[in-house]
Amino acid sequence: MAENLKEKTSKKRNYLTGSTFELEEKLSAEGYEIIIGIDEVGRGPLAGPVVACATTVRNFQFPISNFQINSNDQISNDKKWDLIRDSKMLSEKQRESLFDFIGENFHVGVGICDHRTIDRVNILEASFLAMKSAVASLSRNMKHGTWNKKKIILLDGNKQIPNFSFEQRAIVSGDKLIKSISASSIYAKVTRDRMMEEMHKIYPEYNFAQHKGYGTKMHMDALKKHGPCEIHRKSFRPVRKCMV
Image (cartoon, rainbow, N blue to C red; front, top):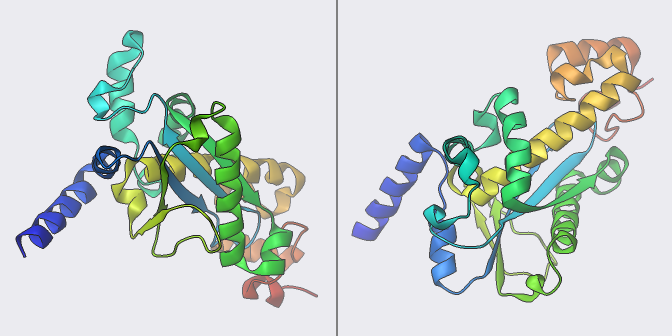
């Protein structure tokens, strides 16, 4: 009972203050040498890809106070560590300011599944495929030999990646609680938003730069007026209704 109360209190504190490295530190003490946080963005939109990101801290060393941080930017970097939290809790400007910082302080892998794959296999399976691709990308981006160390994957949500030969742990609201997952949520969000801004240049009539493909009134009005474009997800009901 006391342990459960302690855990609930810790979660409540993390919700209020942002994500922490508490779980990574615990897993590090248990012998895990690579702790990977994974999150995805883009399940809900009516257009564009689903993007997943996998991150693990560079210069693996816990607690966070032991990390090697550029002394010329000590104050700024400390603030940025604290700012890494669920991407939905940050402004677009804040997420953009953290993108390069995450790339400098985490090994990063990105996986993308486009609208065609989403329509072919469904959005959940496409999300899993993007996550697997992100892990493969991460392994390629790390130094040769490093990848063979004992590792675990931390996932946001209540589902593990099926048919995947890695130890995994699914954590509900992990993007709000676990720093590595938060970093992945931010990196994936910025990556996808930038992709949709590029799509806006090709299909300006849909205003993708503003709503990023989500089903806002602006998007639905444009969809009803123009019908779906190439990157719309034809398997999604609101898009199907607008198809001629």
